Amino acid sequence: MLLILLFGFSSPGSFTHSVSEVSAVTGVATLCSSLPGGDQAGGIYPTKGGAFVEDQKVANLIFCGGGTSKIIATAPFTALADDSMTGIVTTAHGLVLALASDDNGGFWLCYHATASGCGSKSPFIFVDASNSGNFCKSEHAGFCNVHSIALDNSLNVYYVDLANGVLVECLRGTGSYSSCNNLPASSAFAGHSPNALFLRGTEFYVGDGACAGALWVGTKSSLTLVASLGDRIDSITVSTDNPQKSPHIYLGIAGSCNSVPAHVLDYNDMITLPTPFTAPGDLYGLDKALQITTSFPGAAYRLTDSS
Image (cartoon, rainbow, N blue to C red):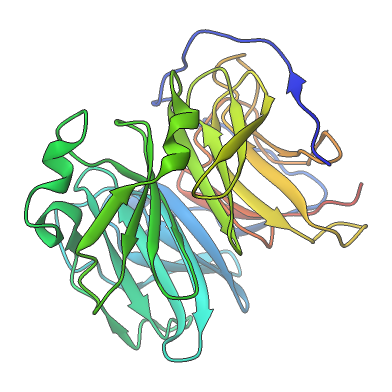
């Protein structure tokens, strides 16, 4: 059972902090210390021998492993900037990865993903273009900010919109994603900035991008505030990669609101995992294998929860 923890509130943090230094730490393995072109790293998803990582600057798909990185698929649209990536294994399409672009208000899909690339990929799917140009224009901000993304078994897309403070569902249909709606659970975000999203079965986990550090858990119909952690939550996952082998919630916390190093919190045990960071920073990628990415420098690491 999750407990409500109130750690205090701070003023909203900046979204431009960077992890300026790293140091060698026991229990931390480097998947790659940089991305091609020195670009920033966004989302991450595990695969054999390493991880899929998105290039936050241009939305290319990168493989990181063994200390090196390489481009394995190029984005289908050039004017992109991504923060979030997710994946799900399907019968018809193998592993499907979805890469979101908050700047462009959409996403693209990589089907039959392997460490060598995509068996096929979708075009870039602009949410507004797929919805007759009306959905994003009708949002409070007048545009869509596809900030953190999730997929269900039917390849329906869900995302939290930081600019509009909503949880959105886009139904796949015939592949056009032409039916998008703000979900009723969005009412939980009043006064907050939903920033991080993870979907496990039918249960959603959402983290706050402001210094309140709110954490919500629930369904697309209703989300419950379970904690206020007092710092920006960049990423969320649920993992059994711990000594108990039980599902724990892990949070990538920026540290910028309290001027502490970026870190990963095992919420269930309230223990901070060893990381190599010595400064606040963006942790937009965190996956169920406890692999993380940092924006500056664009790097990926595997962590160990031995507590």
